[in-house]
Image (cartoon, rainbow, N blue to C red; front, side, top):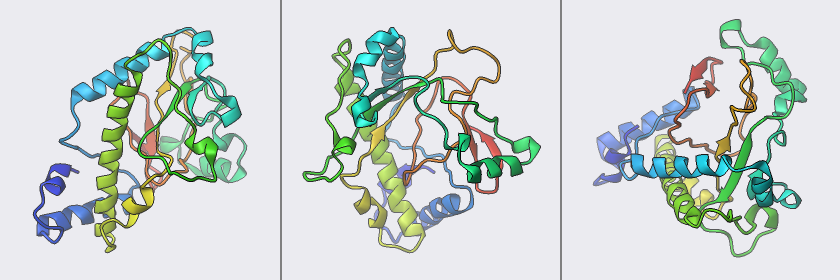
Length: 242
């Protein structure tokens, strides 16, 4: 999906725009996933973000642990390895789904919590009043990276900007007012949530860094990774390499 056509539109009623919106809605309905190109996002932005995260995760664990906020359920800052555990490890419904997957599309079964680190960084405007303070807590700034806020906010804002436009296209494609979904996303607890995997510690074949799971949020967006290993499952059960 090339967002340039949408961003440069003269009218929402333009035939090409309507066709693009329908394509987005169809992708979500039939597969649950799409690939998007946003002309406002550059490779340099992505590289700056990935460079920063590689440097961060390369720090000793005792340094990264200073950025963890377990009393806030790790909703901001660092989440240590072996903290997040895939729902399928203990949910009978999810386990049944794995059992029924055909061999060529079967997910590897996780045997415990994920051996990955994660960092949660809030992006977008926060609500002025909230009943969920842990979901809107103050961001954590790692001590060794003075450029942290600038890089994270720049990349997070561009990711959120892209997903906002996708949400508008999806609404149009479903025959809804353009801002139906985007309006509900305003002041939401949006997260930039990069993970880090230590291949020096966990290098065995078939190591699962993130077990089979579904996300709770409305839409998930991924930037371009430097390394392979991520798979998704389409609505029809097919396993697809990203």
